[in-house]
Length: 439
Image (cartoon, rainbow, N blue to C red; front, side, top):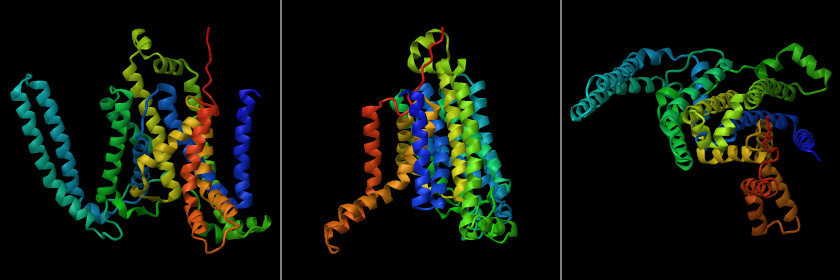
């Protein structure tokens, strides 16, 4: 069987699994999994760009996903006018003090010769700037967070369409990646991984604790939707008639319709990113990136600016992850900083890329679908297996109760088993990277 045929079979099996979930469980459940598979595929594409194209070991993608999520909230939620009136002015002054402090440091670096005097002057500027910033920042935060704290307690957003936030989320993540990359991309691979994980934790900690910006662990709920609401559909005559035509219950049909609308939006985004990724990978730029990945010293000797190219792909991949983060927050309809778990979900995204096939964009998409589907379905599958295994045991058996209660742990066991099997029988992934030789 050729690899092309195998690829077709893999996607056909994946489609069959989604259909089976719809038939056995419900179409609403199947579409929910499908939508999250699409988002996972987008995120896996971003990681594949960094690792598959350039060999950058970034384990901080949850930080960039969180940045995309906060962008969705800041763009779509309406501004809280009372909070702006109470503390907005002082907060803007504290931001101005940050800019003044940075400009002062830059001016000192440019105008004063190197030496102890310049170092002392910079230290004085930093200390003075810190106290000036805190002078405005602390009362501003107190005033904002005390503004109807149970309902608001933050500044709100811009009140713009949430679809626009997907672009802004990518731009925010790209900006953060540029800053992080300028600092950390000169590090060795293992140190880069540690640095990106640490920075990811810092980003998420900020989002959890800066209530004036994100409401922290109190969460921001009720984000606007880019698709209709179920209650509006159920009250619409055209939709009720359409549901009757298919013999469907309007309540269940409204849920399916909304999820189909999300699926169409997500498929468009995935299709555009996949198309651009394929064009880039097969271009001279893509061949250069792979040459840097495989023969870094040789590429550098040929005049390629390795660090600049690494920074470029780091920014692009992080932007894609940021878009996925904004899409996920849009689907959830709320921004919950406490749900971002770098250690847990970073592992999951990396498994998607490795199982699908590092360096192959279609493989990253397949990995995103396969791993997320199994991640969601592992618990019901595990429960079914345990019920079959314990079917002959007495209902009061402590062992039976323990095995059934432990079914949820099948998720981790299944992920580890899949990774081991793929690494043993297909070490380059289900869809290995396609190496084209050019004369």
